[in-house]
Image (tube, rainbow, N blue to C red; front, top):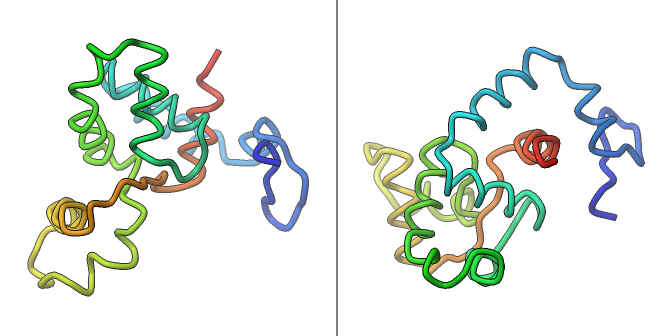
Length: 140
């Protein structure tokens, strides 16, 4: 079940219980970071949180098109980049490919963009599971 988590060895916790077990200062810090994301990328982040910890850019584009119309879809690639720059999401293949392909001197953000271009990667994931948990708590 996507709504259940394992936290500190406790099985079957809901999002509300997981977030309530996290130090309040940490939740406030993450909430502040999320609240500072501009409008369109913020909406995209909320959609991504609903889809899951890992999500396909193509799937989110289809959901976006259904929700907001095809005219709004043009800037989504840029919105994914904004969310990546804010440290909320990362290409799922970053952990596997980026470090082995590029020189140590290449900046991490540039590494991940280059890896995405080379691999035609479409799958993203939340930088940390707690980010998704906090974003889900922000959805009314």
